[in-house]
Length: 591
Image (tube, rainbow, N blue to C red):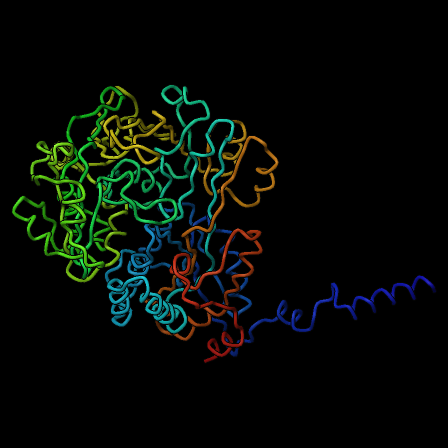
């Protein structure tokens, strides 16, 4: 009897204190399901096997919201893309990584009528996207809010799931912690990495890994797939770069300095003279002696902005507002005195006077910065483009050799960068030219090897200058758990984006260190509005948007995700927030 009374007292105490007893609203929230009047709508859900956990969470949420969900899980990216392009879905799980510090291209690619990843043709959305591209940072936030209102909360073209944090785990016994950085947006900066023992720089290869070994092309405008993006970012220099914190910089780039005119329609780049293309001879990187020149810049950006320059130019939308690319001559110098920047200073003072430029030349072989002979590239756009400079940091703006690409295109039917032009051993002919810090020397089904470009920014000091480690091996490993085991066994030196379930294990290993920060990757549902149930019943789009509970993803991933309203959120917080609302779902689904 005393035992029963004691238990009753404990239960009463818990009820009075509110500890451990769910409230009525909490119970209702956990068990609530949408009541559908009539037949439950059926939707076909497409995704990759790598997103199977997310798909299962979405499936449960949508079924609680009154839908029947039929899953179509494809084993890899290629088969998934085939299904997507055929339109064999009602909803599909997708992701987007914004890699150059500005969300405009992401939203344009996903939602403009001409976007590379878009299913939409919405004139109002197009107008808002174009407006955002012309605005400065202070004004654009409200426009992005309007875009989110339109594509997410009004028309339900997309349903946000979460934003991903990013991490990098490395072997602290091998790598100097001061050399290991994790950029917010851009790919890892390979030339920054260094060993604790600097004597190993030229003898020990740095070993990294990535999941996908399919590398169809190393032409920077023909693919932005994750498998080639990081490689191209480190093989080809650009006019500007982003640093680790998304700030524009000339460090590690082809420019000594740059200037933008007052109306953001003209962009001037003063080129450095100490960057030379590398080639591969008998498996070894060699300095070609061919300077990366203004002519190469013009050639590369002209082909980047031309949709028809190559088959499958996947990035032309990013550069379509470029109207002209000009290499300046001596007679253009006076005009630079008249051209002002936003601070009302002349372009002449910023570039010519500040660097003691005595002459401008169009001939890359005549350049001599010490002697005052420089090259300036002027890029003009067809409208005000404050963030054109951000687009120029993208891998698609990588600088190629005009001479060599034209030569390769005559010799190889598939064109420059095709995987068939990269040998599997040192005896094969390598048809790559690299303007960046590294060049790929060999590739097979298991790994690719790279070597330092001996002619990259020869006189630049600091972490963005010539690579410290001579050789890099990039292993292809589609098994994340196996990759982590290799890291712990010292078979590889670093590993990016480790599953959060392993964090405790990593922290317990004194030989491993981890860097973590909010990333720029968004995961979301794209709804098929071209055919199927969401075309004939647009009200159901809002039912999907309001059915999603992002908190479940954050809980499942142990806090390694964060809430988003759209792919804009990781860069610009518009104040919008997506919340699950089953009352709105029930209203929409029974409409």
